[in-house]
Amino acid sequence: MNQSFFIGAVGAHQQLKRLTVHSNNIANVNTYGFKAEKSRFTALMYDNIRAIDNEMLPSGVGAALWATDTDYSPGAVATTERNQDYMIEGDGFFAVVDLATSQVSLTRNGAFAISELQRPGSEVDEDGVPIMETVYYLSDNQGRFVLSRSGGMIEVDDQTAELPVGVFDYINYNGMEHIDGTRFMAVDKNGGIQLSENRAMRGMLEQSNADLAEELSKVIETQRAYGMALKMVLTSDEIETTINSLNS
Image (cartoon, rainbow, N blue to C red; front, side, top):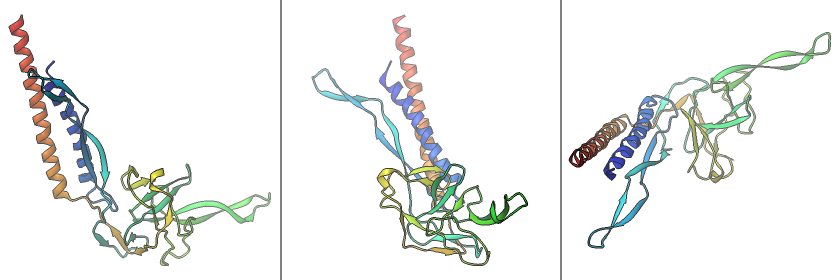
């Protein structure tokens, strides 16, 4: 089989992966705290083959999507004047904890809400069992609770009061795992978590840093590359068909 067939097939498949990356950026262009991803390609393994005149020529199967890097540059500021909205001035992340799994994840999306949680109170019933009481905490409105500067959950007594929302940071962000939408998980090479000196500003939100014009141009570029790769597959198939018909 002609090598160009495999190069075209691999190229078409990888361009579909690239299209997924930029489509996701476009879908989140209005998501607060979203960080766009950039696709990175690398050449696949090549072998040197000996030509007729003993010249060594590289032969391989094209390029592949090697990784997606996250762009951590800040987004534009949106003023909401809502008491539970917070935006980080500078680097850093908010930390949210999932009580069901004890997983602590990071986010730049400060569109928080107040959620209630039941816990045993100081009073007991006639059987000596603590009576459950309702307590209100700051949450991400998706079942996770925001951590304070001291690392604990933030209890809300007065909805108009400014809360001690924690801002946490790492030495570097390289390789940080993008879990979903706006949440991240640190890996070993990011170093230990530390309390950031940057502050959380109330009544503001950070908008997505995805540039719609840039993402649309990348989609068009990807579609054209995909079409060229399919054209290569089709041409290679036609060549093989012609050769087979001549040999029959």
